[in-house]
Image (cartoon, rainbow, N blue to C red; front, side):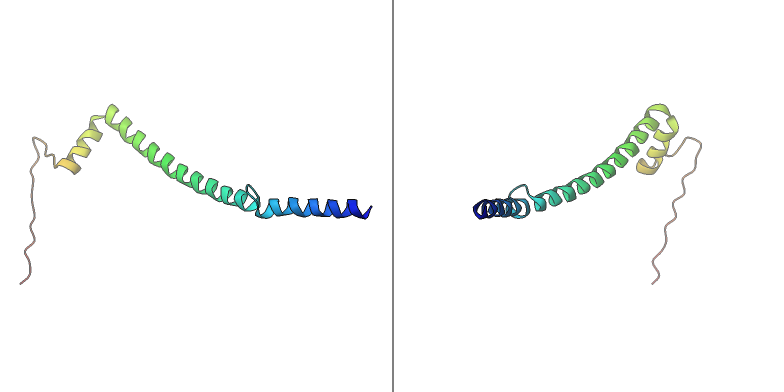
Length: 93
């Protein structure tokens, strides 16, 4: 009976060692949970960026106003009946 108890204790100890310190044990599991949380946060940021890009594409495909606004801000578009004023500040000497 003592031999059986000793064998069971040794087996229990070996299983506990593998659980806490072995490969695919609790520390690996906790590290995987952290990586999953990090990846989910990254995925949410990418999904947000994708939604913004999709909205830009939709605006550009459907409306002339979005194209005109982008041309004004990025390329300096001036319309036919518009007047362009450039104000230059002089350096105080």
